[in-house]
Length: 252
Ligand SMILES: NC(=O)c1ccc[n+]([C@@H]2O[C@H](COP(=O)([O-])OP(=O)(O)OC[C@H]3O[C@@H](n4cnc5c(N)ncnc54)[C@H](OP(=O)(O)O)[C@@H]3O)[C@@H](O)[C@H]2O)c1
Image (cartoon, rainbow, N blue to C red):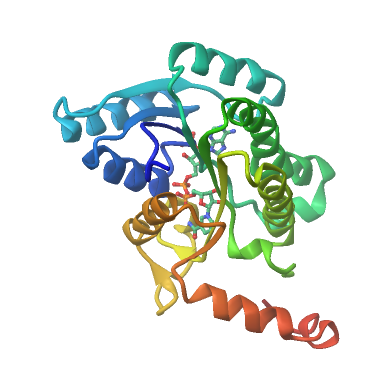
């Protein structure tokens, strides 16, 4: 079984975590298809990656709004028509919602569920069938430690990431033995544009380069569920042990 796919599609490729991961893969000679919604940011990304690749690896770009759920099956079909050797995907797109706005209006809450869960689940439905038929491929999705337990501060985001984690768990089980690997990635606190309004001092905050190294390693080792960095696994284990009558009083 080959360690790393030959050609990987990265959805939400302009994300800081995805960009750092793309740089590492390029350095390993992996061909990339980068998918993002903002054409200007996508062009800047492909310019940067093209210079870094120095002609040693291919980088192709696709523009798509991944919240447009109806368009996703045709998007994947067009990508595999163009790149029939696609055998890896990383789903990185997401948004950290304003929790107060999500509490105020169902429309905002539903939009965030669409961006953070339904979009990935729609894409995964077509990608999984495709990879299953070809009996190969690696599917990896960036979830979050926020999906492991509902917090008052971000439970809409957490609910979306939690839904995604359950979906991936079932998909992994369904595809077990089919030659297709399904990886759930759960970063903790990462210094990226998504968290720019937070006070990012403290030992738990890490740079996106570290998370990217963990993602590349997860692909090489074909892991199931990976906390990034590793120390979030015992933290979340302990958090889940807190009884609900106590947990609901914590201002987390
Ligand atoms: N930073 C953290 O602490 C942290 C922790 C746990 C998990 N995560 C997860 O890690 C992933 C990457 O986030 P990041 O930290 O690297 O943040 P980021 O740099 O802000 O990246 C978020 C990306 O999602 C894209 N996106 C949002 N809505 C989209 C849509 N409808 N269609 C296409 N692309 C869309 C954004 O594209 P535009 O450039 O067009 O806006 C942006 O490239 C996300 O899934 C996030 O939930 C982050």
